[in-house]
Amino acid sequence: MSKISLLDCTLRDGGYLNDWEFGHDNIVNIFERLVSAELDIIEVGFINESREYDADRTIFPDAVSVNRTYAGLSKGQSMIVGMIDYGTCGIERMIPAAESFMDGIRVIFKKEKKEGAIAFCRQIKELGYNVFAQAVSITSYNDEELMDLIRLVNDLEPYAFSLVDTYGLLHKNQLMHYFEFADQHMKTNIGLGYHSHNNFQLAYANCIEVMELPHIKRRVVIDGTLYGMGKSAGNAPLELLATYMNDNLGRHYHCSQLLEAIDVTMLELYKQIPWGYSFKFFLSASKDCHPNYVTYLMDKKKLSVKSINEILDKLEDSKKLLYDGQYIERLYVEYQKHECDDEKDRVHLRNWLGGREILLLAPGKNVVEQSGKIMDYLSAKGTENVVKIAINFVPIDIPVDAVFISNAKRYVPLSTKLSQSGGKLTTLATSNVTKASGAFDYVFNYSALLDEQALIVDNPMIMFLKLLREANVLHVALAGFDGYVKAAAPNYVNPNMDYSFSREKAQEINSDVISSVKRLGELEFTMEYITDTLYG
Image: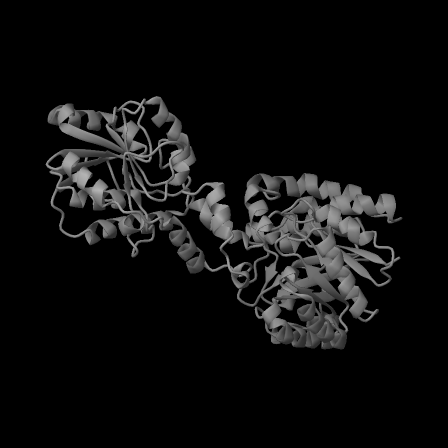
């Protein structure tokens, strides 16, 4: 049976959630509880030369700064390690291990940087540290590539080589293959580690599988964090691993100390920034891709889960684990471009709306809060003289003649209301939206209505104004087109429609919409906003 070491990386991996700002008192409390629990290895943070020293954070510009934070604290019997993401810290930032609070350094690296990273590990080892070579995104390696890496590792002879399941993709059989392949080909004096993530809710179970391997004789290092704190879906919960090892492997960790750390510190952190298994991280793991792809598509608030899955299926293998924002935007736009021949519907639209006054209603909160302005406008014009068209929603208190639908996700709750209207509402849709049953009254080519220069290429306001530009309408009034404010404030009548972004991003989008209106060129109709807006 192997000698299994339990490593805590709360103060390092957990820091992805709070920018490593645990607060000095919390840092000390977590560290001292881990030492008192007699953890085998404790990781105290990142070393990154681009960051300034901050006593409240566990990310340090150099090794000396680690000493500043932890000086005077007892290490007990634990090995103390830090982590360097290869390329973010030069060797000149390190000091000899004999002068350092840290006993070891874990170096993480991507596949394409493995040669340079192993050379850097050698320099760290020459300073007297126990070196851990950490291969991130282990699922990106095939057997031949992993064998090439193991040859480098064997030549280095680090304290341990770790398999890092960065995006939580491994199931039991895959994990066993990687683990046993490495065990078979690595020198026996090199430890073998496993760092899991919980996208599939398998982090704890996978760790147990590794612990129970009967034929592994070498040192094994298992990573965990208090309460599972960590980026993406979180990590294997340290307290569960320690309890299992006490109950089944004859270990004697003081789990009460871990529970105290959770009660005093971790639960409060969890309230502020929740982590753990989530739908988003499940989707990314199910498609073997970077979670930012899923985040990007879900933040559009325009796609069904079916559509998101279909777009993720189009990801090239070489792109899956390396997030590329421009690439996923291209896939999104291409997916939405359902081409159709809309010439007849454009003619019919001109026949219907030509020479008319149009009121466009958007679901901004002012459509309710300033409804009096809308009613005054209709009263002055004569309600029967104005064609009232809602954009991607049906108002509750303002009867409309038609609904323009460009958002497939928002169409789902709309479809019921449209069915209940008994066909009284005229439906106009873009070709990326599929009707639940039957057909829309008008369908327009989605791709022809895009503003390719805009931040939001398929802004529904701009899309419909493009249609009205050709329809020979007389005048367009707009209500509920409030513009965007930061995410903390509701932007829409229905809070489920809200997007999430900063104040700066909101201002950028507002300016971009104004630019999109200008790009429409000279309009044949006059236009006014009758409720408050940030667009003009």
